[in-house]
Amino acid sequence: MLYGITLAACALLVGHAPSVVPLLVAVLGGCVAPLVTGGLTALLGELVEPMRLQRAFALDSTTYNLAGICGPALVSAIAVVSGAVVAAVSLAAAAVVSGLLLGTLPLADRQGTAPKRPNLTGGVTALWRSKPLRAVTFASSLGQLGIGALPLAATALAVQHNGNAAAGGAVISAFAAGALAGSLAYARKPVGAARPDRVVLTGLFATALPFAAVALVPGTAAAAILFAVAGFFTGPTFSALLAVREHEAPAEVRTQVFTVGAGLKSAAAALGAMVAGGFAHGVPLVLGVAACHVLAALCGALTLRRAAALTPSESPGR
Image 1 (cartoon, rainbow, N blue to C red):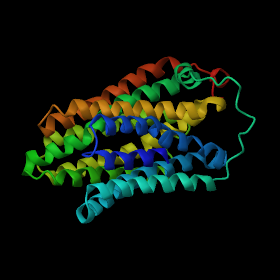
Image 2: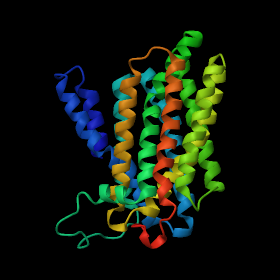
Image 3: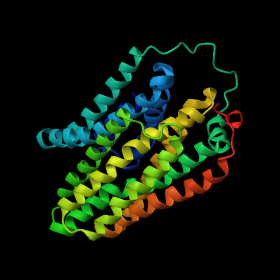
């Protein structure tokens, strides 16, 4: 609910208050963003039976991708009819309603279960101690550098090919549609579910290949197809990442692990977008996105090399 309130406040303050005011409000909203994403996903372990948890993570990933397709389309339509402020406030209202809906979840009462002195660093400690968790967190954050640059890359690519910046939105929608298809496919058949850490690294590397191929084909339509293929691999990658967090994180700091991981990915995406803003050509940007994913997969694999001898009793999450 706070996320929605700050979003509405930003929309209403821009142009009517000193620039620093909406920026500070945006920072406040950004502080709760990891809890909105990672924190909610961390609750799945309490809501779903263990045997169905893998499929639940895949379906959870599907909702993210579905929102990635429908959200921009809906907001664009509202903005055309009623303006950008109304569109932003509509998004804010959706977030507030979502917060109210959480009250309907059958979650266990936590009163009296919290320690007197909360361990504020437990999530970071767990991320470091578990090699699979450390590997996928580090790798996914590096990969997110490229994802943050993706909207700018798609727009620049569309301008480079046909001079139409609006076509960049169609390219990003193709990526989101591919991710939706990949999530649904993985929900139906979770290949490699026994070692989700390897699924994450394989998915990161597989995502890089279609992006790299963009440099070899002309035209926005071909780029959109390759973006859709890349998106298809991100679906299982994200689902497997959630499974690693659930499996490896100690129960008492599981929510911290999910929120810290989500925060690192958000920060990496913001950094990737900032760096991409200095480039005007689409192909080099897309190749940079591919390079981020290759580097992420290699760094994650190197971290996991010494984890092969880790027994179940030695893993903090087990």
